[in-house]
Image (cartoon, rainbow, N blue to C red; front, side, top):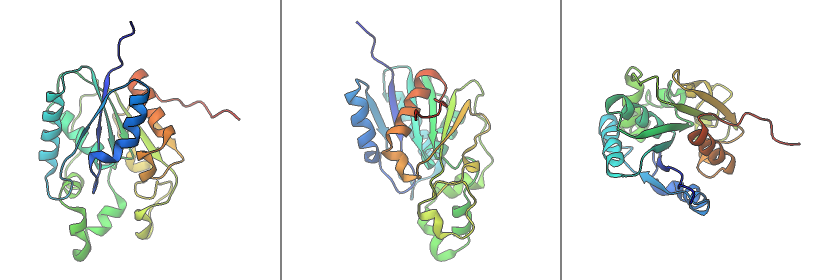
Length: 215
């Protein structure tokens, strides 16, 4: 009998809830793979609290190894969690469009008093701190998007390439084992088959599929 593949834990981004991964989770279940979600208060909570809560969520899940796939701000929380806790049995980590090296739109919105509250506390706290020190032995893969459609476009001067919210350069975490750019928007990562396929490819093998699509 074939052994079941390791579980995947999804972590959502700003303004979201774990339910945004419903389609990805159904696809994984159809493929015989179990998954879980971690939901946290992305507006009223704190960065450290979200990271500690993620570590607690992982501790309650028994199957190991456990891989983590995190979207947008969720990837920043996953990195801080790894720096603060390094839970036993955590496998590979995939960051989907995570602004690990800053956020052009957010920095400009924070300068406007009437708008800054829309970002809550977690993202500004990430932007205000130095990058956390994550064990280089951890296998981290990064997926970036290059289809520039999204709310970030309302902020003039968003550098390209970007996914409509986060620039490709802002996703380049220095400790990543692999990095790939897909023609998707920031939000499209939550339902894109190609994005899920690349995430699964990395958690299973430690590398993305960089082969060009068949003609």
